[in-house]
Image (cartoon, rainbow, N blue to C red; front, side, top):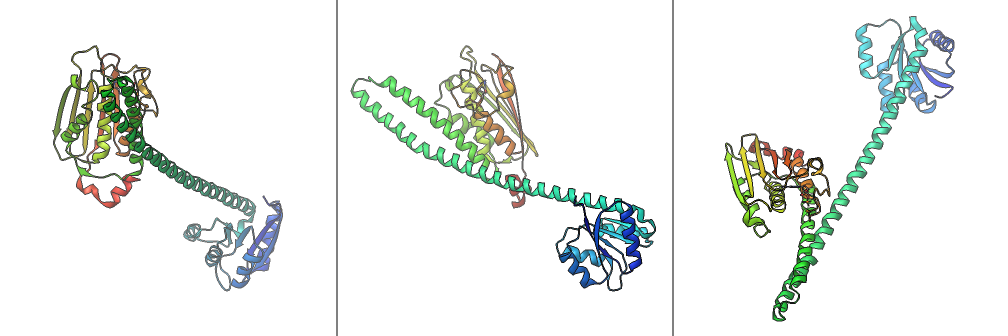
Length: 385
Ligand code: ADP
């Protein structure tokens, strides 16, 4: 703290000012003071004297303490302001504090003034520090938001741009296959291996694009045909190895129309379906995927169950982590369930998993059913945030 405080005294009685200064010296404060008693002198002193604290009597010949406080604030000065006055009513004191006075001290009890000054100074100092920290955090936050946006745009355009050359490589592999047939299929094995690798890379890029789209695109609300969405998901993977041997059991019970974001729902379904196919248990001859969905007025609950290889109990807690692969069997990037979790979070839903090795895995997904009333632009904006 400044060893010599600059105190501005707004006091019309010289004797009272003397008493105040004596009390401060007695209290051990080192200070220089300036006494003023008119509005002009007061305004000028705030600028020129640049006080650390203002001690103000209430009633002055030209104006009063509340006006003085207002002038100080209008000059955009953060200076502690203490009322030093004769007897006042409780109501008056409370009103002063409400207006922004830091403290009030009765002239009949000036011994309290030094500690009131130190208290007010400490309070302003800590407020100032708090404000500085808040400003720094806000700035940092703005920077993070900007970096995040840039990173997201970068990831999006890189993944997007990489898919085009991959598509042409896949096309070329097909052409090569046709040529190869006339040569007696000598490169079939290599072409299939190339196709598999390129498809895997393309799948990863698609996952990254899903992730990016989930974080950037607004939530849309549409009446969803859940059965149709589930069928589309199965249809999408009908060429995956294993799909033909899996029995599909789908039960959808709708007690109310379901309003949700169809794109995000399909991301969830596609990932769960493709995992059940990828991790089916080849030793079983009754492989199945069971989907039970119940739609009520405020919620859609989906139980997704398979009897695949299951997940090791030590690994289950990590399956929603980014880039986590829970088994050597995985040929993916370990992004699928991470994206599912992100999407579910974005929809304000929940997802839980239960799994037993060799028995199978089940996921329970709950997504709020958004009634048409919730589709106001404000709500969309809040949800998209
Ligand atoms: P990826 O399939 O690319 O490895 P995911 O994020 O989709 O990544 O899944 C993470 C891990 O969770 C997988 O590696 C696998 O071990 C496990 N897993 C996910 N779904 C199933 C399932 N239906 N059955 C068995 N294991 C699963």
